[in-house]
Image 1 (cartoon, rainbow, N blue to C red):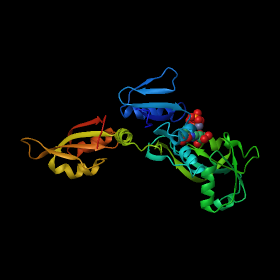
Image 2 (tube, helix red, strand yellow):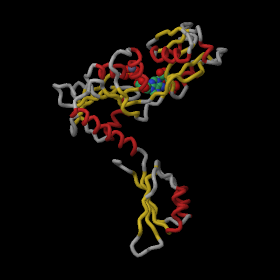
Image 3 (cartoon, rainbow, N blue to C red):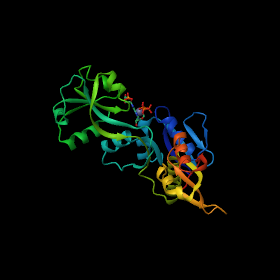
Image 4 (tube, protein in one colour):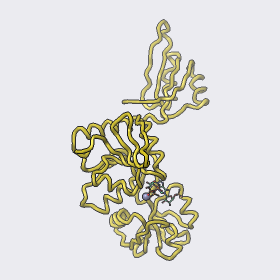
Length: 297
Ligand code: PRT
Ligand code: ZN
């Protein structure tokens, strides 16, 4: 933390694709917030952590200048900043967060005769991610012209401003609507937790580590279920084979019933009725599937 600041600051997108999902994750990590009057801050009520609500493009800068210790931002935005200014001390990507998935891809008009990466040589490629595109072209050994646009990249070929584009794609619907097709992926992106390069203080590092651990637990607990059942001991191998378990199940003896066992297993997702009926057919009974609210490895 800044020497004159007692509380950790985390920058999050104010509104947009990552806004709600980012706050949802922080809440699942156990943070309780109260909004400031101007709605620029969320004050942590149960931990010394405040959230600064900003445009996603501002997050790498806030980390670089040390105004925030942490940020939740698309890897595409973080890497663009990092590559655009290779001399600046770099913000670190601490953790991928599993939402906001998309890819930075090169797309060409449906009617184009281009089929390979080498065919891009000498063409104009429109993008809002010039540093990443330049790095990728260099790595591919392709010399193309980069046309920097800050929005509406997908219409550049129709306006005659470019021969191809390099833009974010998730479902591909926007490309299709603009008569474009994907040629190649430049990078895979998702929301990440990033840290400022200026955090050195041991107490701050410890706080960040604690928050990361909580976020990690919130992420790994998502969708996890606990399956409980009883069964004849002889059925155990067949039952274990059928379980969509994350790790080996715990097997417990039952008092006064040496031929039976009780089993508990963490599963990656809910078990459907079919899976429960299959387990029952193998001899399992007293089956129960429970939501897991918190996990700490
Ligand atoms: O106001 P602010 O500057 O904060 O928001 P913004 O408008 O710059 O960003 P926003 O909310 O659109 O996106 C925030 C982050 O979400 C991006 O930086 C990515 O990390 C991530 N993300 C995930 C995406 C997409 N998926 C995505 N599909 N960001 C943008 N898109 C756009 C893309 O640019 C294209 O126009 O959606 C269109 C393509 O979508 P499909 O589904 O048609 O392929
Ligand atoms: Zn933005």
